[in-house]
Image (cartoon, rainbow, N blue to C red):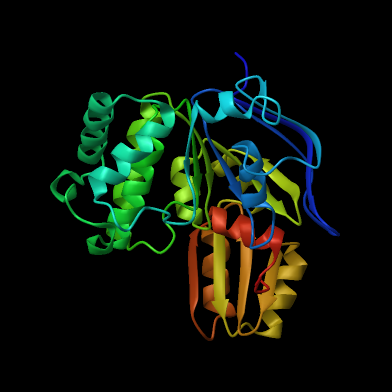
Amino acid sequence: MNAVIEAAHLSKRFGELTAVDDLSFSVPPGECFGILGPNGAGKTSTIRMVYGFSPPSAGTLRVFGLDVTGDHRAVKARIGVCPQENNLDPDLTALDNLVVFARYFDISGAEALRRSRELLRFMSLDQREASRIVALSGGMVRRLVMARALLNRPELLILDEPTTGLDPQSRHQVWERLDELRAGGLTILLTTHYMEEASRLCDRLIILDAGRILVEGKPADLVRRNVGRHVIEVADPSDQLVGFLREQGLAYERFGHRLIASVEDGSDLYRTINDRYCSGGCTIRMATLEDVFLRLTGRELRE
């Protein structure tokens, strides 16, 4: 089956800055594919090339088998985009924002109204169809932007950090709707800073840094390959503990007043550390995608 997105040696330059550097990946139909990375890694630059907002500087990029540069109108007709910005019209109601936007896809007035109300119900916004944008909460606005992206019944939904700034209840509501869309076979391209979101939604993902791919794979596989099953965290680690870990040949990171050791099976090791070397706090937990992300991209703050 042909890939929905196929990028080969893709690059994007802004003057002297290379935002995307020799990127290659493909997304088959029905998959939720994630692009992760710290600020400035090239995530948004990549997806803007996918939906035709920004032309590639080099390489090839095909969506539905079409060249995004030469066939951008045909590509845009088949995709839905939920950008980072809440760029709704504040002078219109929730319903009118959808109905007016539907006209860009040459959807008739009656059909636009029907689809708009259907999507408002799907996003649990049907009770707010007459509300202006300023009267909606942040979670409602994000769900409305997503509803707008679905008006043309896209074959590919592109989500650029769809739940940033939302409270946990609103975030989980968005996740539930995306789960329903995935179950219906919709292909999704997602960027996010939330590792829990990526782990839950993505079938596969890539982690970028400085415009290049560091790793690619299924979330659970990436955790096992790059970290292990368990993580042991120790507060105020002693030099004796560090020496013990070195003797055992175990991977660890020490920063400030905390040490993190990654192991495949940590139950026995945890008991040993807790009994002999733990004067402060000592905990064991399952390794997560966030551990992978921090190990590969570092812990320094990115502005």
